[in-house]
Image (cartoon, rainbow, N blue to C red; front, side, top):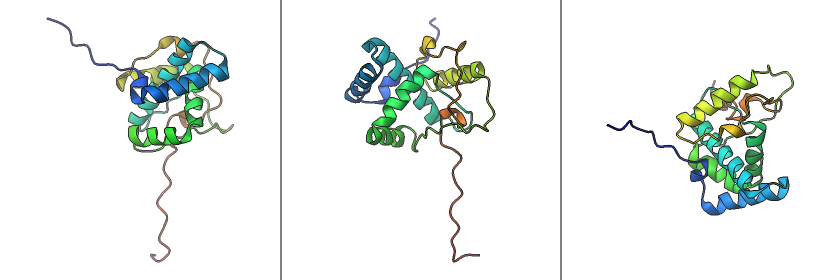
Length: 159
């Protein structure tokens, strides 16, 4: 009897091959890196965003290396907004850190984020998460998800 192996997919499965290639090409050009590494970075950024789409509470955060892919995707605003709508049903904001935000243990955040990626059904490239040296100081709300939604505006006609 075979043990059931859950289906896992690469992050790149969330976008078209054409869009993935454009994002990878931009990383190669802007970061002066080889195409293989750029593809791994973008794949993990997409897997991270896929996990964020499924996550509605636990703060998640990309590693500095994976964040390169997220920043690259953000520059393609139309594609990114469409992706967010299709994959998450909402915009996945990247909110810079406020200096007054309490810092969380980077190793714990990395573990939690990788677990969320795996739980969402994506492959984790552990090498790109670099738990030992990861120090995320730029992100608030874990860089992962929308800040809490604003309450609906009050109708000025109602009291």
